[in-house]
Length: 285
Image 1 (cartoon, one colour):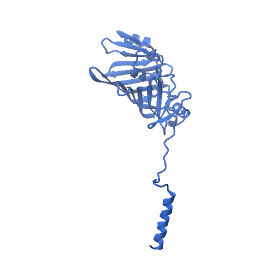
Image 2 (cartoon, rainbow, N blue to C red):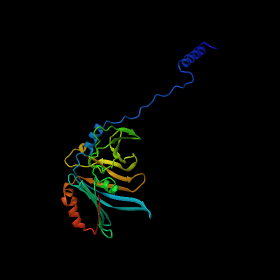
Image 3 (cartoon, rainbow, N blue to C red):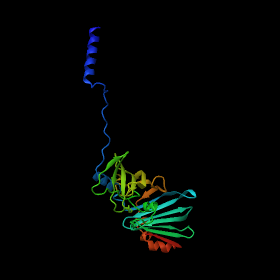
């Protein structure tokens, strides 16, 4: 064996002696993303949607559900208005005829069906008594935070944790529908802190329903620098449980238009009841 070859063999033997017997050298561990602080999420949400006060949006609403007669699908043109301090008014029309009017004053929610036979009105409260009948898609459609039009605020003292690709944190229940012993949690993109989903877990921890957000974009505010414009999702989908009834709102446009939105009769249940004159009324308390 030449001198060079002998030196090489000796170096290899020395390296082998440094490693534990029977173990291969492991690659360095790569740390996953750390969960953001709840305070950072709060600040991001206030920046994203805290300045939205008047919103006028147009798009498409799609409702899917299943019953004993099979699968069903309804679609219509959506005209959505939100006036902070007054409420939400959403009109769904087909071929120019209004088929539904869904709204809320922040305390009660309602759904008029002018084309039903008989024409109907359902009325409920945002915080119903335990065990009361409720309609999850309607409550989503009349809750500004669940529509992505108002900040999703973490509960005081809550801590975020990473689950999948999102940072999840429990939400402050104020301004959200009753959970009946459960809780709302919101999932945010770890890198951007943009909202991606909200889920309602019941008292046993099971998924009761969820809302998914996509295509979060800026809302132009005239006279304000683009960097300060609020941001809202253009696609909101609420689904009951795993694969249950779903309501999809696809917004083609969102504007800050006080003249179109700040109209008290749009959010006044009694004024709307006189206007639509429903033949049948169901109160969900």
